[in-house]
Length: 219
Image (cartoon, rainbow, N blue to C red; front, side, top):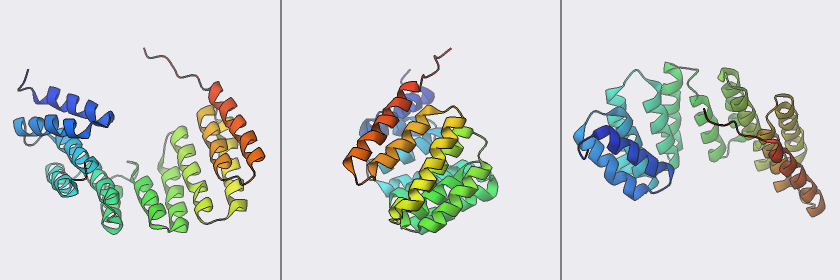
């Protein structure tokens, strides 16, 4: 089915997920040539271009995506992510906030928080992570955002607050029955622990909690 745009899109997305970006571009360009107003393929092609460093082409795809779905949050969220990848932080914040304005529950608060963290404004990042936590409906996502917020203290060279915050994440993950995130918290503690013996002990705890994690079988 060489002229089936959906198959071209699915194969292209599969290649993107496997970081074979140049090959993905070929298939996604074919999908878009077959269906010039195919939003999912346009979005994926924008990412594929960005991952190969062709940001201007990626931006053009995102602008087309926004034009096709002007009332949806995802086009702005995707455009914000590409702008952030390109180091255009202020422009990324504009796009993320447009997404938030359309749907506060979509998840773009996380994009704002991560952008502030990359900009070096860790205090602003923490505020935005708190907002992301409030709007998230998934417990695993909440813990992820809490951990990302906690590590901002590391970037500020404040180990006391970092220890307090990361240990609180580990406790939350334990009470929520999410050992994978509990393991991530101990890994974070280990990575910035200056004493090698203490770091090895923390890594042992991270490993022990990871071994508790049992992925659910697919139906």
